[in-house]
Amino acid sequence: MPYFTQLGAGTDPEDEVLHNFMDGARRFLHDLLTQRLQLVHPQPEVAPLLYKELRQEALAVFLDYVYDHFEQLQHEIRMLDEDRLAEFGLSGESLHQQLRKLAELETSPGDESAYWPRVGKMLQELDTTLDTILDPLKSSAPRIGEFIGLFKDFRAPVLDLVNG
Image 1 (tube, rainbow, N blue to C red):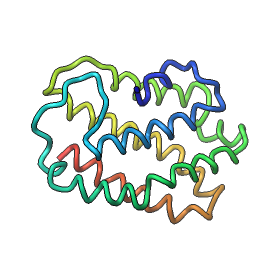
Image 2: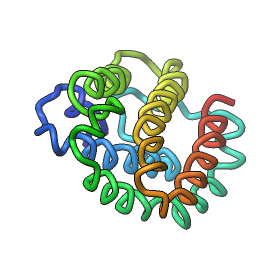
Image 3: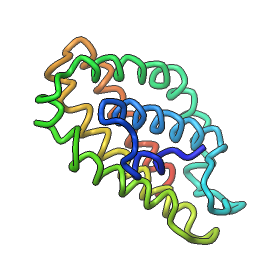
Image 4: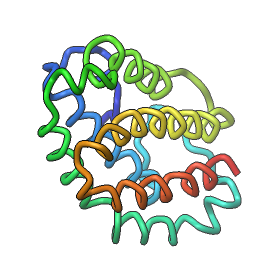
């Protein structure tokens, strides 16, 4: 099941795009850390050294502190009105441009040598899009501010795992 390809096509109803993105982001991170990433490209036998060394620890943090909070984030997103979403670029063409970048990376051609660089680029785009979503939530939903900080702190080491 693709993570972002459908979203990049722009065929989802506008009010579901962010929720479907959050679902895709959660699945992508989970599958990356459980070594079950489902991309059309062949995965090489050898993973980056940091990934091999620290993947288990990152997975434990993800499962214990991050995975279940995606639903809470989605709930908070539903609470934002359309004007607020548009103000932060979380609707319309601005959002679809970000999602198209992810979809293009997910489906771009390549062999085993392009696998980890592509995953790193996908993580970077995912990180940028998540920041776009999390920043307005900090001000509109201060009760989840602590989790947003933790979530941001979690993402940086995951980027390092893949990019070495």
